[in-house]
Length: 411
Image (cartoon, rainbow, N blue to C red):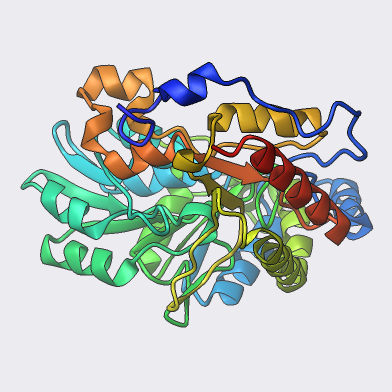
């Protein structure tokens, strides 16, 4: 079997021939995989919030929710402590029962699958499309059953999933569509901003994301009643948060109508988010420029497959993922990553598909051959350094180093 058919396999040729390093010299520069773009404006906003005497969910969080909803074009936004919390809250609001099923992509971070498990449902994994590595509507349609309650598309790497087809499946089977948009701010699909397409959308503001609050997340939706339910459930199911209880205009009385969670965002995080939101257009422009430069520098490398951008989308460019062509190389992807490390270059792998992890394999009997596209991608994808503080020369150094490694180990 070749690598394209079985994750973890190595061809006989690749196994017999040692990797050739491009140079024995020490790296001429260091390029980490990521560095956060935080400036004095964010630092000042946090300091002002701390001096205000209100640190937890309060006026800054409410202001961030309002500003974010306006920026996205959504009716409502609910700020939470992480995208994982956002996904869990959205699924929890469906009041799922044992035996209910939720379909999502296998090529995603573990939080997507774990949120489904913690909601009490069974995660039904689907394969991805060959071009963008997003959820495959044809495989989704095959896996809908009478127990399916929801569909969770993942906008992989910031490229929007094929939402027309997925929303059509959702409507046909009365499914709630909850978008995992951890990578997808500020992506657009057919002219509409991600965050206004499905029933609920979950965003991430983790340190590496296009907009960061350090840790944090946001839910967007049109349904006002759902927004109220999520705000209550994010803070223990209480009818009033601390700001409304302890401010001069508040009341100490509250009711608990549901055993909710401790998923609220803090005002200190929201203060960072408000500044980052104002900077988002410029940050997105820089990501777009970096992606274009990588593509320009690597488009003629025969050992690489570069990211696909479908004509109906405007990607958020959260990460820049290349795929190696194993038939062109004497070495495996893991060796390429190690050789890049020797050149001072940090990389990532996004992601090891869920079906290859022991929990999902053992609990749900998933097999690599059930997901041929994701299983093949798992052996070839590499996320290159990609962050707004990168200089153009950093991109050139990464591209040139990768080119030399591949040239030296061409089959």
